Image (cartoon, rainbow, N blue to C red):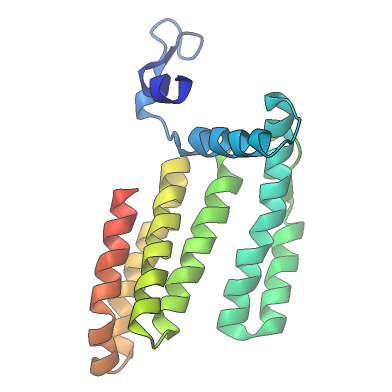
Length: 193
């Protein structure tokens, strides 16, 4: 009931006196949090919505080091991944924005965006066509969802777009031809979200 009415709501205390419509806001964060809260309450976890939203950023902030580690490991090995995860976890700006009670969109968008980047990187290394398509779908969904959470995540579109433009120039034509379909599917799923 309330989730379907969200886009039609107007907050009159924001940008007084006209208010602010939620129809043009990045609603992915609110839908994700509400969906996750509903799942936890149906699983028997007894926590207030306020308490859940206060603790959720700390868990999301801790989870961000997983895709950072995986990206670093894929690019430069285990040491690089571990170093990237450690550096990410101690950056003061990151620690402040992923702490208890800081319910804002950046940590959520970073988690989904970095996970999407990891899937895209794995897509380039995959030889099996079906797995390559699955990875492109996951990458598109995750980066598209990051875009629905935070406007700043749109920079990932540029990064992935440059990656898609430069990679065919650096690899063999036969391998480049195999990437056309997954790149197209990635773009469709990113736009879909």
